[in-house]
Image 1 (cartoon, rainbow, N blue to C red):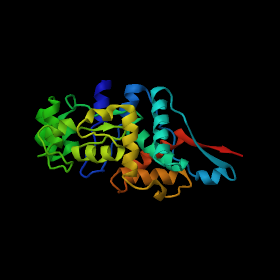
Image 2: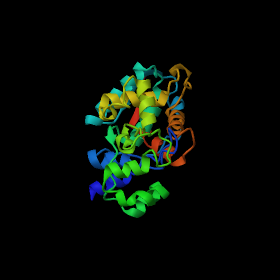
Image 3: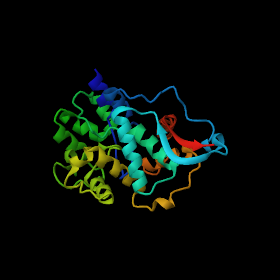
Image 4: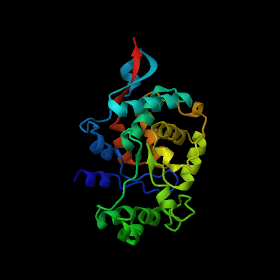
Length: 264
């Protein structure tokens, strides 16, 4: 039963453009697999941190409530942001909140659909689901059908088997040959020829931050004054620069897990 729930939540990354995300996330999967919690009773803060902190000085250090392997992944991701020049603590929290929503800080690989109902597959993939559902218990064939070169999805998959080779991986589910090539190049990693590297924690952290910068000078990011506005900014970026109220709400629900250190 738990495996079925994992697979249902991870049904997945309908990438109709390079960055587009579905109205679904990988967080539930991480919760079921590793016992992480998003404290679903929490809501986004009603006031901005800049107002509540008052005259306290921001030190730039991020505090978080994760533990175990997830905590190590959070710390590694913060280190990568620092290395890549993202030093605004609110920008860091915005990115961390989106990643927390997407994967719970587990560098996952997309699961197969064998135990997923045909109706669920059709609801996720539409016409492609109708076409490919009979292949759902054969991962290579199924993923090549829904993501491959003849799927109609612009992921840059050009060779037979690319749909399976470049399934969603990493902290925010990079999918497709073109994305592996592009974000791997930005991160200095040859993901196109070594896609499995994206399952490694240190690589997934590096690529996730490269994704959010997408070649931009980090100094040109907005000078965020609170974590709420930063989270909305990076959530929309993660959703292909479009507004998704569901995604915003899910990412903002991660905000209480992070805070900036202050001194009086």
